[in-house]
Length: 212
Image (cartoon, rainbow, N blue to C red; front, side, top):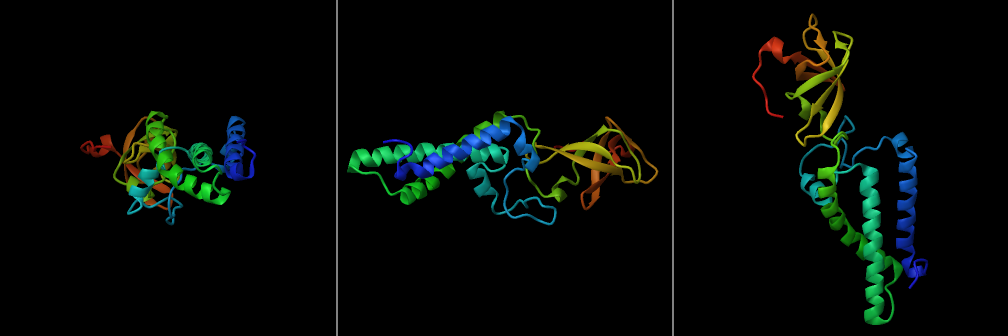
């Protein structure tokens, strides 16, 4: 059985796409599309809303890896299962399955297997990519000013960890117009308007530490 036989074409195609993704990743071309993380339906901020589908996403490993890596992993698992299944079918029955049927079965099997592999891979990868969450869920969390000085009308860059431990980079202004927030200051995100967050310095407010 060869890879380019008609009944193996879906799996040959998957491997070809995986190779193209690898080449794009090597030359940084996938960054042009903003290697967003996979999620479900978007809310008004373009980010997934955590809810009933979280269990399904966790099962499939969605959000544990950047979308390009997750898709490449799925393609590899899909091709491996499909080619192995065709070999098994031919050894048992003397003929492989039709390509569409083999692809359907392999796709269904590849999803949970991809999820099982994505979870440990995501655990060992650097956490500097953003898991899509509702922006409102970041309110009430502690952040750190990383660059510049935040003044009223002149935001500064800050980083915050969400409930999953993923790092988000935000633009932050002080909640009080007369306040300034300097690089290294630890702040509390207290409100937002669109994608703009407003924060108050923890030291200034003498607030009790919160658990991230």
